Image: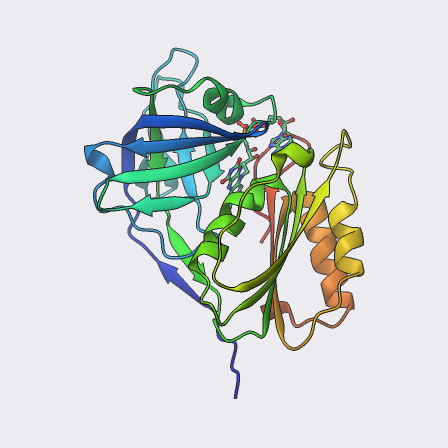
Length: 263
Ligand SMILES: Cc1cc2nc3c(=O)[nH]c(=O)nc-3n(C[C@H](O)[C@H](O)[C@H](O)COP(=O)(O)OP(=O)(O)OC[C@H]3O[C@@H](n4cnc5c(N)ncnc54)[C@H](O)[C@@H]3O)c2cc1C
């Protein structure tokens, strides 16, 4: 019998200062940055949609990192804290001491602007991952639905899937040249949905594709997109009768500017 038991795992949180080792422009809107340095040792990420808090230099060019206090994250007083944003550990290679992060270049904000200009030797801070959501491996089908901010998690997930798994990917990207090579042993169909100038918060390409998708058997749905869209996609699946434990929908960015998870 299939139980579909997904589980949450907590990790001890560590804050690290990491150094840029290499930068590679994967596609026009995706910058791959490989990080390393002695503080990377002991890094752990247990699931493809894990996220870390990344800390970027403040206006004075300094990394001002928090500590965990009784009230949550506490920054040192009297200095401008580093802006922090959520990012996916795309790949971690413990033997080489390398952590890969893929940054969407959307043209605004401390993270995207930092990534666009990053070069070997630059520093950034990282905290976490604090926990992992490990999705049950016994679903008949995995439906991965995301805009470009979810592509790092999808790429990692496909790489980690066993050959016995079946997946469908609905991936919304700015334009055709943002398609990426995705590797997997699973049976997988990838549908690229290109916005071609449409706004990422207003597009309905993912919604239309999901509405038209026929899925056999028990399917787990993973969704990452602009917050309002992620919420609406979750509501759509609920109305279709998909059990809520079979859906993980997260707002990966907000059109009004605050980054926030909506899970
Ligand atoms: C769990 C999780 C994992 C994530 N993993 C990744 C990842 O691996 N790679 C990645 O690139 N992003 C990822 N994101 C999304 C990323 O955290 C946000 O896009 C974040 O807002 C980027 O910060 P910023 O400093 O560049 O822009 P902000 O300062 O947050 O925003 C500046 C302006 O840009 C807009 N904006 C922000 N993000 C986008 C976007 N993607 N497209 C268009 N406009 C945008 C805002 O509405 C605002 O107007 C993840 C988010 C979550 C919650």
